[in-house]
Image (cartoon, rainbow over the protein chains, first blue to last red):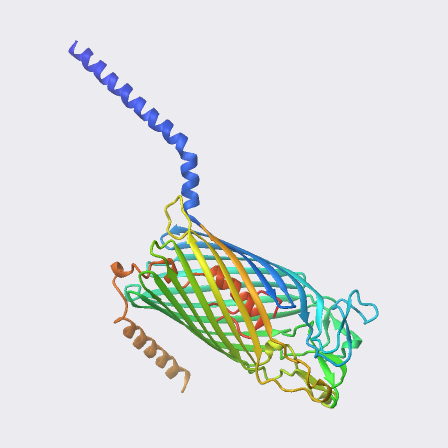
Length: 435
Length: 75
């Protein structure tokens, strides 16, 4: 009997334990799908933005950007990003304003008479192709893997496609932490291969625009190196210093840019297609400092860059972020100053008396001397994150960008009094979402 | 300077730099401010990507913070 009572007791305990296990198992089996989905989602981060860009009287663009990243733990991360651009509007073709109307053909034209689209620029106006449109689709990925506790490698790639341009880039870098992870040194390399299929073909460099001499596809290739040192200076100060160099070779022309040929009186007598050197080497130094306070932070970056085309540029940018007392909203004003010198072969026009001595020339205003200012303001507010993360937010950003030409050479004769170097003004609006 | 001496100079300069950096920095428990998202060098990466694309298409310089490759036929 004693044994029987013990047996019943054991049986009751076994039944109770089985019920408890079954109940727990049932509870777990009900919770598992949602828990596992939550667990999976909590490992991923989403950063996204929708940007609208509008130039005064020229291009406008819409650009959605989506980036997702996953932290696998132990330093392994994966980043995937997607970008789409849609551009429409009017793009300068490189020609000068004139006292007379000027008629141009679209890039697909084989003559001024047979062009699918021709356009006429009024006297005194900057010639722009009003039918400009383009769409770009880009994908990128970066995968970071730890090699040791202090060393990690990142391999990545980028693919970008437009109807007249295809670009494939591969990159790799290695980073090592020193001094209790207060110093990080990294070295990266990239290789880029671009294929160009200009609409209507690539024009013969410096050929007469009226002859429509065009050839087929073109390509260009680039490779570069980036050496970076990041240093924790104090509990609230982080600094980064980068040195980089790259070299591009191949077809570096803009196939849609022409140059006005003028006589000594300033009258346009024709146009030729531009021609740039077939190689370009760039070097840059970049310094960034970040300083944090209890409810604020500041980022100041400085960059100096020079290239083998004779362009030297300096850039300074300051971002200041101020949080409210609850630290759930912030305002971030931004200012950027940029200045560049002209490329050696930049010229707003060619004189018809110059003859065949000219071998490289471009009137692309982006290769001229100018300064640019950007002012911006960003507002961000934190979002409730079901995973308890602290950096989910919704933000709005507005920027104003203006370019002003420097060292402008006055035009001869009839060009005097015309605005040969109109400034560029643009506004950028952006809404961002991070979760 | 021959390449061998130049390599030695680079190594010595690098060692001096790293030993100089050793006197800077913080302990792991002092990284509260540095751990904030707005103190990361990658903070605002989406904004930077949008801005860099704008500047790449309108100016002659690009890169510096990261690789200068374009991946865009706009310049």
